[in-house]
Image (cartoon, rainbow, N blue to C red; front, side, top):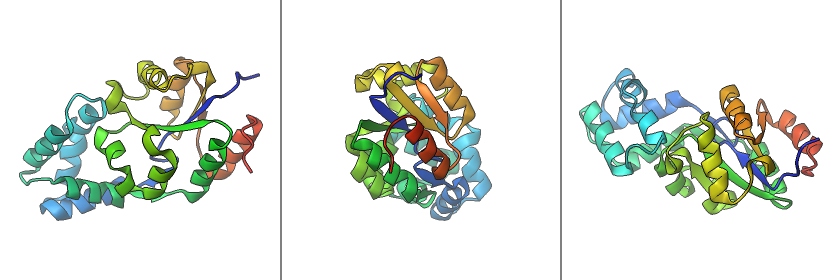
Length: 206
């Protein structure tokens, strides 16, 4: 029924890792001595995070602008510590990804700035060890999910056709965007349901 799958493309936050935005905010608030509300507004209320995710601002400029908005410098270490505090590995999903990797290619495609891919070994060493240099952020492609061009640019860079790519994301609109781009796609809810879906697609998950 489906085309053969050459690549399984995983989202990061909400799939491979649980993501707690409030933990990120609290850590950054503590390091900058600003309120949680001020941090939330600086990151998301001003559009800064969206611009970084879309690759419209460089890494150093992103940190500089965040510091300017907060009135307190934000170092790379402080940013990484806050981001790491927000991420909890889903070991069950990671094991599935490792199993799948013995039968086809795997990669990550996530709405994030370049810093996340560059420093995954510090943010989540287990993910870095399995995926290596196949961790791709939307910032590298100049478009964010769910825009179809984001997926198309990613799979083109990976040398795989959209129809041979199976994309997994926990956000309905991102799954819809992948389908519009011609990928096969699945909306993640939990590890048990994903295991059944992968088995149904003959990806031989144990």
